[in-house]
Length: 439
Image (cartoon, rainbow, N blue to C red; front, side):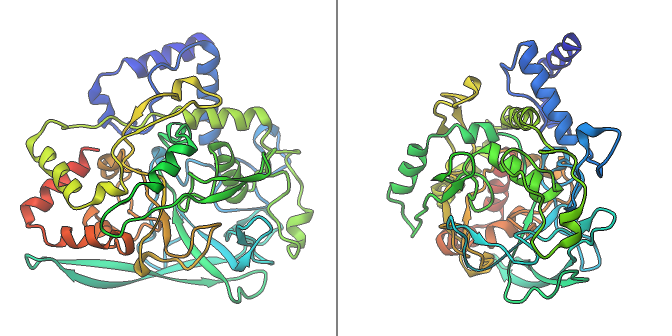
């Protein structure tokens, strides 16, 4: 078995550079991952990420315990090909790769969002037999138009969220936030960036009203507040907790970090449902999932030397985009995985929170992040999304259908850069797009 895994990884690593533009571009391991033990962990983690979990009890006891409440039955369902999900096109379509966060005004005991007493912190549409799913969300789109300096009109759609079939009573004064599944490659490299580097990025003076700050979030394992770096509002301190939280919230799978079922006190049938083990995802499985996601490589850039791409990169910098989408960072010492340490990377992000204005606001606080703040999303792999995830949207809720729409939604600290983009001539916008598609 180990020999077979070694041969398979050898094939992956020996593929020519052109392999990076196949539909497997987001599924490649970092070069340098060698040895039978590392290979076994990587491929076991991959199988867990792709695993369809089943209701307990099951003959396949290693993978039972789905629910009692859940959104999807596997990780890959929300991160197809390790890439992005998409928002539904109309209110009649299910969400599939998009979920809805919930909270009430106020804070929990650690400064995080206050869960809804009946529905918790996330709406789970589905339940196992005998447990009612929490309800059905629906998205209806409203469109407005923006006119660029050369007269081109661009439609910008914004989502209007509603609910039906609510099984546990009215939502009341609830705050909601829609989240599309994000890409999962390069996460180990982001985890290896020192907290001191994040703070230094926040402290450096920036023009155009750009600021940026580090979120401070609760570590379940270490029982303290730490810098946040994962999640769309940097609301998770490390990759292990991000993985365990997603397994718990999206699939209803318990783990050493989240040993209780995802049921509220008011959900009686949910609390009485049979468990798939205590916990359902054990320490070894959680570690292998962490290892796999930590060692997924970001795809290499393409067409870096083309004149149009180089021109677009200059325009990207001149517009001020690089103030938040920092091209290069250096990782520190990863506490577990030496392969991730002391590396120059090109994520095009500072991992900081930025006020993006009222247009993108969800009105939902998340630790220090207020309703207008979002983490700068890394841009690596951006140019391959149209090929690997056709129809995938951009921004936190998938509202932007094109890169141009995504830029035009920038407000707040991104408003000056947006206005510079709007003033560009068509050929300059195409050059900027060519650069983004090279990432």
